[in-house]
Length: 139
Image (cartoon, rainbow, N blue to C red):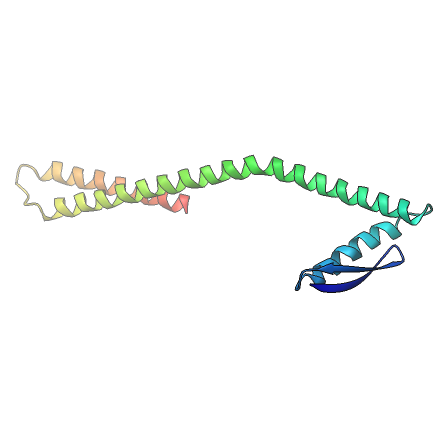
């Protein structure tokens, strides 16, 4: 245990705390002291009471803000997960389309099938371009 000397509202206090927590205890005491000194008039007890009430009010406001923020962060996490899933699907489709294109390039061409072969290659190329564009937009 460590002993710390604090001054709050002009009065010294000797406080015990766990080893290593001395600096944090001093910072907290300085915060309480600042609040208490900003309260004019009244007794030391009254100053400390109002300082405690102001700090409790600030803590309550922070809790309310955190409670309001939690659902929003859950929604954002869900949106990120959905976007990652869609990106993965788009990458898979792009790989499949590239493989299909490579297979068509390697396939022997028949004299009568040449125009439809070219059209199929153009359609595949268009699909690859569209997928690549959508992946770039997700990134």
